[in-house]
Image (cartoon, rainbow, N blue to C red; front, side, top):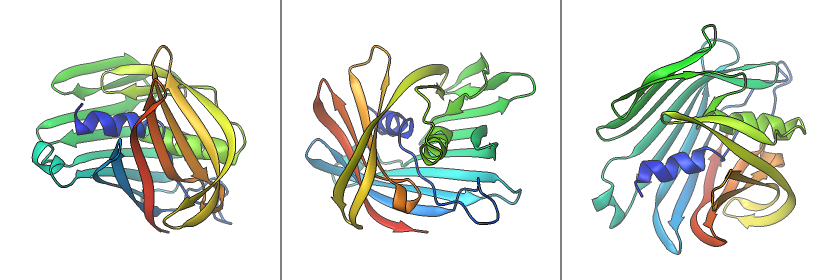
Length: 236
């Protein structure tokens, strides 16, 4: 499996954000988080997510970079970089643009909400799909889930654009869990995500005290752990 595909699968269900400001209840606070990535029991690289506020109020740029290390750097010499530009309206995220790249491979997507279409190019193939309300890209969904957790209204199903297809994912809030991390012992909420008919499950640990920043994520297949990300540092 290509590194970019692993990143996309995790991006669908990881989320991050910060506490609301006093002036803007729905604002998302900028942050930068650094994670260690493991494939089964082997460390394969690092992952960094950065949220920045745009010049326009309630508009943001969210960037995720995955970097292979050690022997895996020989196989995946190019970083996986994903970016999403979005706005926050009425406590919900509305994606505007998505860009993903790994070496010569790229995905470029634009959301035309007025026309109700999502258009672009995915690995050289044209994309032109019907755009339903609430549709997210694989990055913007992270912020949407964070807002839902903060507002105690996590949706059960999300429509997510992944490359050239809009897929439905089922989300389940499994409950609280206290875990130890590199940045301290934290109370978290555990959320599981799974595409209908898939044998893969993504499970995430979000820390409310940190504005629902994800501090841990694990992907399993048929109950066996495949891929994990664990937080190393957080800047806010």
